[in-house]
View 1 (cartoon, rainbow, N blue to C red):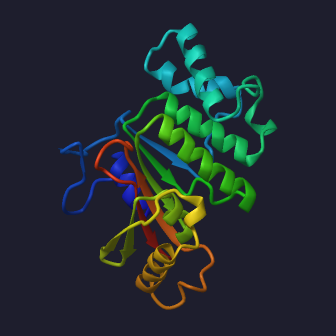
View 2: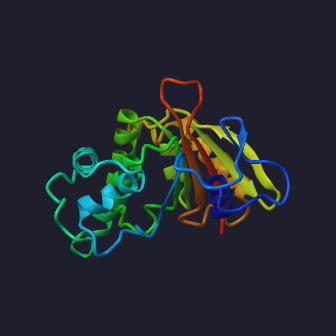
Length: 231
């Protein structure tokens, strides 16, 4: 699943077939596609605001505009009062918020998220899931999200693509998309059971099965999708 994300990012070339973005073959990296890892990958010597400014600096945005945009995105993720702190002074959840703000500041067309909440405790993870939805609704973009948690995929995604040894086994449309009140709905339970069955024996005992989620602009016909697989 991580290999799929790296291929989408342009870091790996497929041995066969094609990866397309907007109808064009992906042959190299692009600022239109940004990766977010489980490890926040923040620069430890830069303040929170200056970390968020990094993609803007690379694009040559003037210093004053960089600061303004960085503050905007920090406000979007609830860290407006943390801009002068260093990464080591923040909790894991706060560092992931900074990473999300930095990614959004670059205004990519697609965000590729590789188990970004995997190392967080359950409460912080739930908070980050809701934050991602809130920020995505305010600033729509495609999101491909890898996770070990089938329930996380069913909550965040529009579609779940189950990965097997030969690739995607099945794409499942998620019922009651991003509705926290519907997590126990029969349709959601049926989708979860189908995913676990596709993952094979032992998947139900796997407390955190792996999944990938894709999000796109809410006003378009393109849905959010998720891919699940163990291992």
